Length: 512
Image: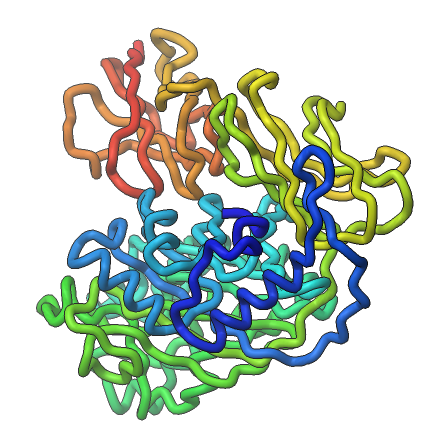
């Protein structure tokens, strides 16, 4: 849903003051008049807003295999009960937009697994995608969302008798390399004075929890004190653990998020219990509260539901934030549009000056553009796509001299396009890279391709996998480093939905 439709009043407030405030902010953004061609523009340029502290609730929620394992409505109810403004979701498995609709949060980014009360503008820095959320005119916060590798799981390794040295070696080789790019991309944003958040299922405990006092109090869950590398790296980079700021004593409040049960209250024998779901903050964001959302009556649970819909408790942290100043930003909705449908292009402030435009580009050349007549912020323009061929495009903000101030990649697909995958060759020599082309994918954050032996129907039994980088089409190559050396025989490559095991398309090839 675009900001224009929000401004027209098609989002109904449900949860009190914060939702009403968000709607009023959207209306303030949209003191709009309609120009020829359906372009939304402000009736009068607003004065620059003074940046002052305001509340913001950021939530992280692993909803467990698409949120359907217990009751999807309860998963949505948990978000509503938390009154979250921005939610980083893990394991949506293609149900992110369904969750957004059920919670009344109008803005969705499938490539980041984010839903929001405020407009989202995704950007990429150093190969890492994150989003700016526009809280108002010239007011933004930044948010990233991660789901780090689960297996092998450090606490289970510790519980099996492996010592601190072995566990640290595992974390430094597996999860630490996954978090470092996030730190590198988001760190400069917070240092420039923008409140910055990182939500996620980190699949790692915190060094703030595995302390000597906790070990003495709960040796069955914390067999030794350990300086867990992921949380320590974030702390050294200036990130704050909002739950532990609000609840500083890990002995009194362990804040377990894994696991309330699979499903609650079923706890497996010798289960590892820990706090691995975090809302981290950096920059001008002051923690006011942090609530555990989970099973009614569960340990440390502040917002309880019965039944609770996930095997992870969620965390909803409320901050006093001083928003950062908006950059030139642009986004297209949807990211994958069927030819003939409209694409909505939202944009924020630009550098000013005459001759600015919002445009659709391909190959560095504007194919269609609409002038921006004033200092409008956070508005939406619509473009028809019937005359455009399927393929990759960019929505762009152009300055008066035609240079690109900001751009956002989107795709046009042919009507009726279906997911597909094919090998670039019918057969490959032993150890030769295996090339694959895919198309028609839904472009979720974690759509992936796995390589299997032909005839093996066990979807967990892949030789290797790669994510599609949230693209609907493209190429991937699997090398010996990805798969090992495959024995001669027939194999299949399978395109899968959003980090789950729903098969979208498959192809076969031979290794000779």
